[in-house]
Structure formats: structure tokens, C-alpha cells
Length: 266
Image (tube, rainbow, N blue to C red; front, side, top):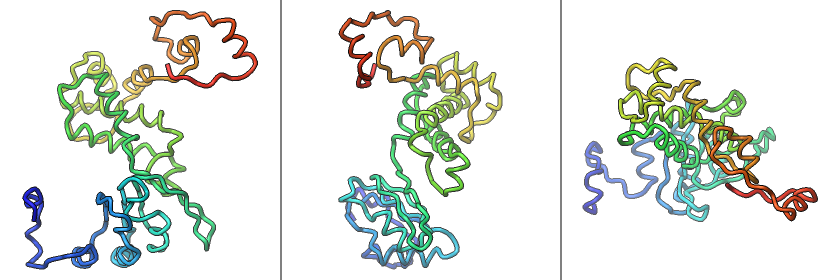
């Protein structure tokens, strides 16, 4: 093994040497395959079928996370076909929906993308100013993400909330991050320490992804909002009183009255 891989080497294989992924699947009999290889089709159809057989009493977990699609270990369609439509699937790249031929049921693949958690972690850190970011803060955000699916998403067996709800979900995740930072005694912003205390249930440090309504409300007030102009920004963010009032030019008024302007980020 290369020197940097020695630390991760397993010593509980009783001398068995696995030279291929097929050999490894057969020996380990895993419940999940997580692809970070950037090797196109590394999860062959024979491997996917074998994963389905090994996990006959459960659902095989297949996560081909390599980007872009030309480096993905398998596609959603392949994973569905080879596992009798039982797969728990998430990918790094976006794959199209799959329609089960026998039932015409449409399944939506999960996309395991950092868009769900990174903005929330960043916003939470900016607001509560932790001394540092711990693994348990990140774990709390992951738990909050898992808890954020609504009843319809749960009923459809979707792993992630729909992308259309990402702003709503991001606020919840940032609130969970802040609560965990306060519970660990690392949040330096007194306002958020007080809000978490007033929300209650802040004893202990075990990350559970929970948050209170006071913290959630404060987070929503400080989220960035896209707007066409300062007047619209005032309406969606009334706490931003420091924005100057900018009068629209006659050309802008004329353009606005004849056709909607292209949205600009402010």
C-alpha cells in the first residue's frame, strides 16, 4: 500500500486479499456502497445485483457521489433496475427521475450535495460566532436535514427535502447549528445564547438537530433575500433600515411598466 493508505488498512480480514470491488463485496457483504472514486461505472450491474441479493431483507444503499455524470459510479436507472427498485440512492450529480415500467410509479433520485448544509453552516457561524466549528455541530446540521423532510417527502421515500424548499430548510439547519454551538459553550454572540436559553431544552451536548422557534425566527430575519430594487428589499427585510432610498430613473419606470425586469441579486 502507498504510505498514506497504510493508516486505513484493515487487519480483520483473516488474510483474505480482495483485488477487485467484486471480491470485496463478496467478502464484506456490505449494506452500502459509497462511490468517491471518479471511476465511471465502477458500480457495475453485476455488483448492483449482488448488493440487492445480499440485502434482500432490507434496502441496499448506493451512493455514487463522483462528479460529473461521466465519472459517476452508476446511474439512478441502473441502480433501480438492478435492485428491483428497492435502492436507497443518492448521487453527486443530478440524475433524471425514473419511472417503474410495471407500475408507472415515478421515483426521484436524491442528490447528496453540499448545497443543503454548507450555506446553513456558514450562516449559523456568522450569526452566533462560535470559537470554532466542531464535528458535533456539523452532525447536528445533518440530523436537522434528515428531520426536515415533510410528510409527502417521507411518503415518497425521498432521502432529501425537495430543492424547492431549500430556503425554508436552510433556515432550520442554521438554527440547529446555532443551538448546538450554544449547547457546547462555544457561541460568542450573546443574543443567540439568550435566544437558545429562552427556547429551552438546551441541556446536554448530544447533537439531535433540534432548534427553537425564537432562534429560527431570528435566523430568517437575517437571511439574504434576492430583490429587484431597494424598495422590494425593504419589504422582505424590514430590519434593514440602513439601506438608502434610491429613486428609480424615468427609464427604469418605463421599462418596469412595460415588461418585468430581469431579477438582479442585491
